[in-house]
Image (tube, rainbow, N blue to C red; front, side, top):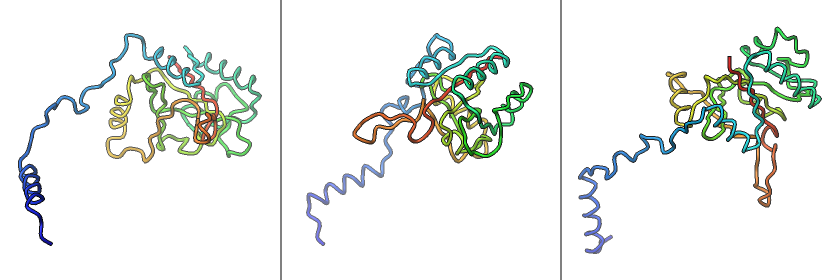
Amino acid sequence: MKVSPAKENILKKVRNALSQSVQLPFPNAEGNNSVFKAAHDSLELKFAEEFTKLGGKFIFCSSRDEMVENLQTLVENKGWKHVQCQTPSVLKMLNPYNLSYVSSGEYTELDAAITSVEYLVARTGSMVLTSAQPSGRQLPVYAPYHIVIAHTHQLVFDIKDALAKMKEKYPHQLPSMINFATGPSRTADIEKTLVVGVHGPKEVFVFLLDE
């Protein structure tokens, strides 16, 4: 097929352009620096503000006793009988309190789930959950209510900071699933009507422990 002179001229210019390297016009604008600046407020306050905006329930606890007291109040108010927890570190914290409603068994007749978290992102009010956690992929999604036990040292400002810490924590291979859960499950797929709790928990509680 014969190529027209005009088309050949265009292709020639393209080939010449590809053969010569051109420096980026704005080398400092390639995501090396964060667009968002950390606020002067504490990360705890920032996370609580953003998390509650999205419908999450935030409970700050200054001790384990206070955390368990708040947990018992929540369970009693909700009338839960079976709260699932598969995280050894959390179970170790709760075992001395003899909480009969907390178990590590099967998912049958599950009222709520307690899990740990990798990190909390203050700027977006997000929880970073991964498949490497003992609760795995299913439990945080399967339970109608999700309770997260987190510590203040797990707070980071931005998603970029969380990913950097994830690379430090898992230097050889990142978990196969990294989930940034932001508030309760929600969807507006059907007639643009917002429905909560369709693809996951309808309520999410974060107990932030500062020891």
